[in-house]
Length: 225
Image (tube, rainbow, N blue to C red; front, side):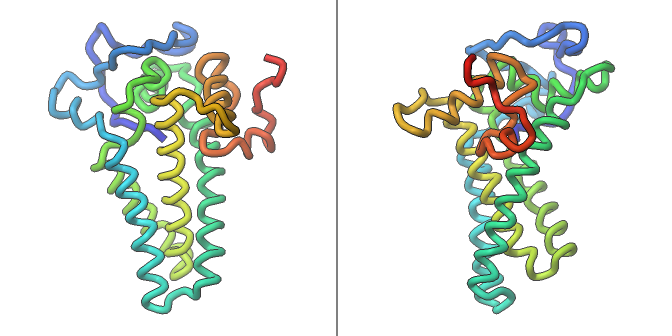
């Protein structure tokens, strides 16, 4: 879930309140400037390998630690891993639909929505903003650890592993969809599904790593379109 810290961009890239400006026309070249300070601006860009490495490492270490210390059995770790992964798919859908596409009916909400996600809709091919910067990735991974561990105890290690694995998979799929051409096989469904969200209307197709919740909730694109 691509995220950047909030800031006031220069006037030429100032975010427009959605209620006043309507849908943003995608630009397939360039990148928006979110900070006037060059150091802060640089921190909003990242290579996809950084967050992927961090999340995959957290998943592996969490499983290894819990199994090697006898905190979880192999079967329990596997089941919790799947549960954590499944939980992430729901969180992915809810965050994308209700947080990243929050109704921008005030200047504050418009600024938040543009900085967190609207910039991605305006520059969908900007591959340096398809994931969180490393410093935010480490913070999110640490926060998730404390939430899962202090809520579920030792079971939290398995849930955390599945959750951050799902997060990493989401980042990988999202990056591939925006950077590479659609493959000529069954995987093309992910490209088509996400294209509906970007280029048809942003009130549908919120799932990225899976279309499961779009099917359940009823936000799948019309097949005839």
